[in-house]
Amino acid sequence: MEIRSFDPRTANDGLIDSWYRLNRTWRLENVPDEPVYSREDLVEQVLSSLHLRDLRVFWTEDEIGGMGAMASLSIRKGGNSTIPGSVRIFVHPDLREKGIGTALLGKTLNLAGEKGLKTIRFITCSRCPAGKAFMNKLGATALETNRANRLSLNEVDKDLIESWLEYPDNDN
Image (cartoon, rainbow, N blue to C red):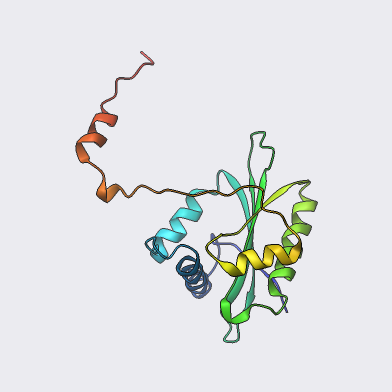
């Protein structure tokens, strides 16, 4: 199995399309009640956050040459966080139980060590039984459980938004 690097800033359209399809599969499995991002929104979301973090993405091919699994190591830039890095891994359901996730985890942990990280956060989704099973197989222990709430601006009271924007500037 060959593990390759992926940089969304320099990837060609075919690889971006494959990344988007795998990301869409992840979202449908992990957060099925949330809207799926468009390809353009996904790229913009990732690219707009790169000034805050060093993002390294690794991937392996599926049987038709597309992205079948990916792992990301995200390291915060600046600040004094007690856990400055995080790892996320997703293996397409058709490719699980073949050692791919473990190989990708090894690659990301080696890089984290080279970057001097002593502690990282391994992120999985409690709604995805495969993620929990992978974590248990590794002997990892859940230290925290989070629930993310997102605000859809399409459903927000426009007058309320206007009142926030009209808040007096206290710097004068």
